[in-house]
Image 1 (tube, one colour):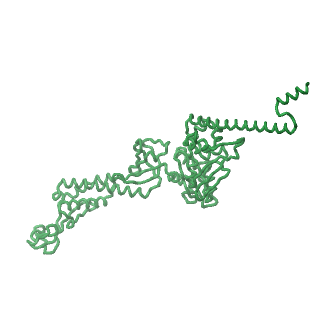
Image 2: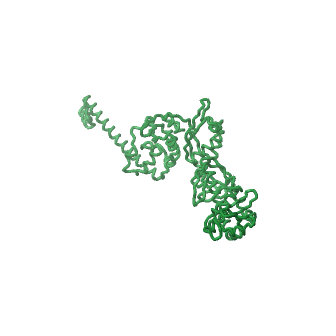
Image 3: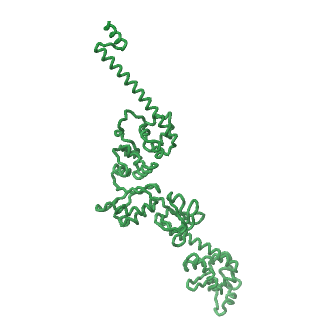
Length: 460
């Protein structure tokens, strides 16, 4: 029988797919049972035996002996005379079971064997997919290293240590990431999905968990559980804020995370492409947490509405831009970290020499609403706040066009000039009235013409 040669013909599947031999034998057994069902309609009366040590495959057909002429089920029964021909020395009696070995190649033919080979390939492929899904499904948010194998426009393909394919979409890469083929990179497993019946392992370098895993590696106190990371918020490639807490009063969590002269945090910053990382000490005092979250700015005072989760913070003029950050990144991350909506205002007590000021909303009939919103988003909510900064500075902070900024400043200056002119007229009228009242009380003439007349009469 060609059973050994048959098993050896499937050896390449075991080697290529790294399937252990017992599993391969079980799959092979199931494949031949499928062939039996196709040929005979059922495999109930067949025993498929696969030896995982020698690689032998044997198939036995099991039937019950019935008297000659009483055959009712050809699959489950055999006549006594036919059983005698199979094994003359056995001397089968009615009711006993006859085991007959099936020659695989003669019984199924080479076409069926080739079909079985294809079926086996499909079954082993399914096993590999299932094993891959099971392996990575439990490892979501774990840090993993992979070698860049292929770079495409929208994603890159990586291979892990076992040659499994991993995908990192462009959206999951830091904006300044640049990789070369063959380079080893680190990322976290974000998700494991099935697409077109194939498992897809998606990696990410932009999720907060990536920063958290890097900190676990660099900061032993976090790995040991002495320091815990309460929350991480990120704007990948720009800025991140990490709230940490220590369970040991003797350990400074912020200092431990930063390290001596920044030794611990510098490695993480390099991995994140120079992303600014603010490490703050977690507290249950919401007001203090907001103050720390707006680092590096300094807050003068704040008005908090705990029911609406809203807070107004007031800062010195030179601190407003620090609180808001580039493109509003700092205040956005502070809001995510604290869970409060934060509005930033210039502390009006610090505006020296301003006799009057106007809210930008008062110019809504002359300035488009989206332009006003752009100024307010970065903390310029009054006319003086806009006029006190140069066009270049306003362009950098608001991303508005230079022409638009100049038009807005011209409108605001015109309003101030008009108000100043009106103030001058009012002051002049007030001075004139005061002079008239003083002259009347002293009995002097009320006009220059009257004074000249009196002087002429005195001369005569």
